Image (cartoon, rainbow, N blue to C red; front, side, top):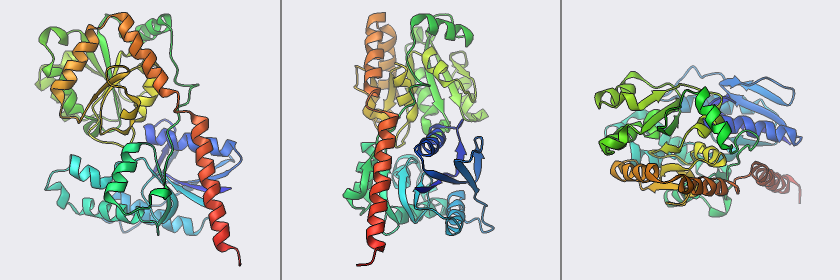
Length: 383
């Protein structure tokens, strides 16, 4: 099949959504499909199997880069020979749209102030989203969590039978548990020796992933426990105002920022707990990667990957990122556990990751492609 994959930034070393796009393109290519990736930015060795189609920004930018990309993608698709389109970034019409970014209508209720909701960019995104969640523009929706499937059903008149919950997969050649000797060596290599509990905070957007909640939570810990932890942040560019949150609260000695890293498994294994108080997102893939390494998570119910967490057994859940006192209690409880109890959490987290199989994900995705291809051929064939 000739497949067009739409992803604004295609980067195998980027965040979870970018890594998914690179992995799914490579996986479909290995299964014999011809892949064309439509993007503004392409960071991956070009191969004969994966073709890069540069999406040029429109002269008319509109209010948002999202709408600009959408218009440019649609122009590019008109000149491309393909059987089905798989959109991983917002655009319409397409055959399949994967809900990997926040549903903007939900984000508006969760993370935007009344003044921000009057911003023309916000209104433009709402308009694009309503067009995407229309069966006339999108033949099928792929959700990676029950959370987003439920949110779509509550807010849009999109047929339930055209919404497919396809669980994310995890690359177990990259993310897997380790013995104590390897963990000690990784900690030594990352200069994390000293006995403090490491709370890992990976983020591409520190605001959305809950950096303010982390500061409030650490501040809520009993003073005698604060010196027993280190918040280790990795990922996208953190700005000075976010860094200053720790300094203003006298917590700078409890925080370390290592920037963008490639050895993600090392950081998971070097941590005791994934501390991920996401304000809202369809599925935080870092929770799955951490679980595959045997690392439990503390996250919110507004993160779709919370479905991985059995509260009090494989991690901890709070209703939303505002529950800093609750999160502080969970961290205190976890730090106070003995090694055997923490190992129970580790085993439970790993076990919870097992249904999230990459081959299974690809099988279900291919089955959806075949289904839509058959439907299209039946519509186009003469009676």
